Each structure stands twice: as C-alpha cells, then as structure tokens.
Amino acid sequence: MAVVRKLDHSIFDAHIEGQAMNVEYLKRIFAWVAPHKAIASLSIGLVLVASTLAILLPVVITRVVIDGVILNQPDALLPDFGTNELTAWIAGVTGWSALVSACVIYAVFTLFCHIFYHAHRVTFARTVLCALRDMRHDLFAHMEHRPASFYDRVAVGRVMTRITNDVQAMFELLMGMGMLIGEFVPFFLGLAIMLAIDVELTLYLMIAIPVFGLITYFFRQATRRVYRLIRNTVSRLNQNLQENLAGMQVVQLSNREKRNLQTYREINSDNLKHEQQAIALESSYGAFMDNMVNVALAVIIWIGGGSALQAEISLGSVILFSQFVDMFIRPIRVLGQQYNILFRAMASAERIFQALDWHEQIKDPEHPIRLPARLKGAIEFRHLTFGYDPGEPVLHDVSFTINPGENLAVVGPTGSGKSTLIRLLGRFYNFDDGTIFLDGVDINQLTAADVRSRIGVVMQDFHIFSGTILDNISLGNPAISREQAIEAAKSVNADSFIEGLPQGYNTVLVERGQNLSQGQRQLLAFARVLAADPEILILDEATASIDTETEQVIQQALKTLLKDRTSILIAHRLQTIQEADRILVLKHGQVKELGSHDQLMALRGIYYTLNQLQFQEVSLKEDIT
Image (spheres, rainbow, N blue to C red):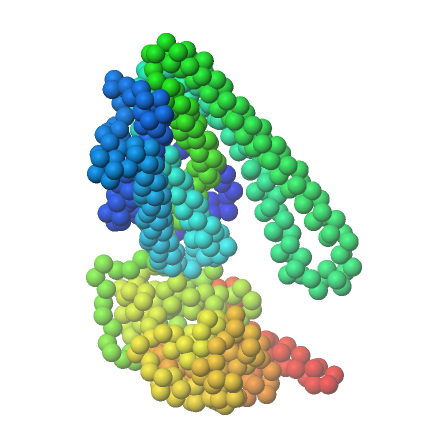
C-alpha cells in the first residue's frame, strides 16, 4: 500500500484571533497590489497634491489674511510659501482687493483639495479592489484543485470563510493603509511648516506625540479584548439563530420555544454588556483626546502668545499653529482605529495563507500518456490495497477485471469499500502505481482530468448548479450543443417532464433543484452523462431514493445509457442489478464472490444471504400493504 503522509487538517478548524504584525504576510499581500502599481502610484501622487493644498489653506488664512491684510504686518522672515506673492499678482491682474484675491485663492485651493482627495480615494479603492479580486481568484482556483481527501476532512464552511470574510478583512486592512497615507502626508508637511516658523514651539507640541501614542496603545489593548468578546458573542448568536431556524420543526414539536428563547436572551445579554463596555471605552478615549487637544491649544496660546507680544512671531503664525494641532492628533487617532483592524487582518491573512500553502493534491505524471480518441473501456484492478488514513486500509488486495462493454454490479455491506473503488477509478485519491489500469494503461500515468473526461458518474445525491435546465445538462461545455443536450434528454425520457416546465429547457432551477422531484433530478443526471458521452459509466446508488413508478422510467433510461459502454453499478437493492453481466461481492474491503446472479445464488454464499434477506423485506412490505 502507498505510504500516506499524515496531514494535520485540524488547523482549518483552529480558532485564530488577532495576530502580531507579520511582515512576510504584508509582503505577500502586496504581491497582489504590484500588478496595479501604476494606478497606486497615481493615487499616492494625488494625495500628495491634495495634502499640500490642505496645508496651504490655513497658511492663506493666517499669513496672508490675518498678518498681511488685517494687521498689515507681513513678516518677510516667516515663510508664507508664495501665497502673499500669489495674492498680490491676482490683485494686480484683476484689480481686486487683496482680501478678495486671498478669498479666491482659498476657494480654488479648497475646490482642488477636495477633488484630488476624492480622486485619491477612488483610485486607491480601485487598486485595492483589483488586488483583492486577484487574491480571491487565486484562492478559489487553488481550493478548486484540492483533492477529495482534503474536503473529506475540512468543512466547506471553513474554506468559504477564507474566500469571503477573510478576503474582506484584507480590504479593510488595505483601505486603512490608504487612510493612514492620507493622514500622515499632511502631518509631515505641516510639521515641516511649523519647524520653519518656530522650532521651539514645534518641539513643545511634539512632546505630546509619544504621550498620545502611549495612551492610544493602552486604550486599544483594552478595546481589543472587548471587541474579541463582542465577535465571539455575535458568532454565538448567529450559530444559535441558524440552529433554531434550521430545526424549527423539531423546536416546535418539542415545545422548546421558551427554553431556546431563554438561551438566545442570555447570549444577547452578554453581547449587550460587551457592546456597552466598548461604547464606554470609546467615549472615554474620545473625551480624553479632545481634552488633550485643548491642552495643546493652551500651550500654543501660552508660549506662542508670549512670543507674539514680544514680536518674535506673528499673530497669524500663532493661529496657524493652533489650526495644525488637529493635524498632529488626527493621525494618531486614525492609527489607533486601524490597530484592531490590523491585528484582525493578520489573523485573516494567516487563514488565507494556510489555504494557499496547502499543497495536498492528486499527483499527475510529468509526462502523461495520451489516451486515444475513443476507449474500448477495459478496466483492471490489480492487487489494490488502499486506505484513507495511514495504517488503516479500506481495500485489501483487490483484483478483478471488467471487459469492454461489460456491466458489472458491485454489492456488499455498508463500509465494504464499494464507493472507494469508484473514487479511486476517478482519480480522486492517490494510490500505488500499477494497481488500476484503463485499456491496459496504468491510470497513474494519465492526468486526472483525462481520466475523468472518460468516466460518467451518476450518484444518489445529484448536484444541481444555478442556471437553466440546459445549463445543467451541458455544464457549459462548448462541445455540447443545445441540440445534443436536448437529444440526450429525449434519449433518457427526461424530455417529457422538461417540456412541461414553464420555460422548458430555459427554466431556471432554484437552489439544489428543489423545484424538481427526486426522479426528475435523476433523469436530468442521466441526460447530463449521456450528453458528455463517456466510455465508462458509474451508477452509485442512482435509484435508491425514488419510487417504483419513477424507477421504471429510469430503468428504460438506463438501457440507453448502458448501451455500448463499460459500466459499474453500485446498489443496495439487489433486484435492480440481477440483469448485470457479473456481480462483485465485497466484504471488509476484500473480493469475496464474483459471477452472474445465477452463479452466485448457486454458491449460497454472501450474495445469496443478502438476496434472501432483501426478498423477505420486500415480501413483508407487500403483505402489509
């Protein structure tokens, strides 16, 4: 038996909370941004222009209007970044007063500032959305190629969470970074202006930055714990709600409404308590930061006002400092807001890269053998031993052949390995070389896609995709025309019910085909297989869940399907396989009997016993009815 390496699939079920900053994760995330660097660079250029204009707006008010126009004391030693000269030039050209010219400059700067900020946000959002589109595409494509052994052990909901919720967390992370760029660019530009006007006063204000930073850090540590509790209670609320709504009939039959409502009320109360804690913390933090802004303003008035009285600095410059205080505080506030988002995003990034780095797959040969245009359909199992887990074989030394065009039925008790045989034939799991052959070729020397294109499978639980009846027959295969799909439906007697639907073959099916009966879904499954025209057909309990009348229609369809094809039929109801060419009996993963119905009945072995037991059950049901 092939040595199977034990993989720890439990990591997909592990609950990952906020993680520490991981630079490697950020590098990998930005790899999806790199193809869109042109528009990202444009966005950064736009925010630089917008930030420069945002900084110049208070300069126009303070250095031009207050110092130059109102006080008529323009100080050439203090920088005004050309705004006084621009005002004088406009006044000279238009004949307007200096005040009107300054107001026009302020209005134009405001307009273009908002335009460039808006353009920055739009272009940055486009960059992020394109990057996440590519990430979601790569993640979906990767998970689409994981083998059946992966989905046997990992819940589909866990995979869906990574493709939906966790990718959405990346959107919040990247947009948050764009927000930080928009805040810190004016912060540094404003800092440069303040240093150019008065170094001493600027240094006094900069002392407040680490104080604000530490307070924000400790506050976010506290809120991080509270928000984690909020997420947990919301998750419990959703889980409880889903369980109750999905099992509403059981709830009502058991008179559990009051008890379930009490449970929901308790979880809801916990959520309310934690939400109130979060509001209290956020309110306290907001009030504290507002007070700190007032303290900073007091420092400016005390020190800057004294300097202005001694003519060391202009009044406009003092007012300019007071307007720049918010530019000092706001980036720290935004950084604090992004703190929790960052750590949640790191947890989401870990989950995403867990999935992307999971390389469990069906091994395909480096140099695969090409199959001919049409197979004969000979199948051979040669000393096959296989287990889903190391050291726990399900099949033991299984050997048998199926001749081209032969109809082989496989029977046996539950857990005997019947479905495992067809899963291996379809290359859904890895197994030893030289154990399964298709027309004399080891199927491990063929690509999984090539093997599956030659095999049609109809299972008891037939999957319906979103779309029309026609879409579900052709599955979007361009090689299957509308006429071929309709002809396939007619051949298996599915046309009779399809034509009776409101839009016929264009009828849109609801989720999982719930607007069709079980028998109609099975006929649709047969039409799908016949339209694909495979050389090998596998029916896995295909008629187990339908009534006797519908089964008669399906039996007629089966005759069309089985004609000139090698087929394997797996069924518990033995009366459905008595006409098979041969019957293979499995027990505990071993071939116990092989022969026709009459031969096996004559042996009086396992098949005979199973047949007698089912015959008694059928007779009992007939007596009752």
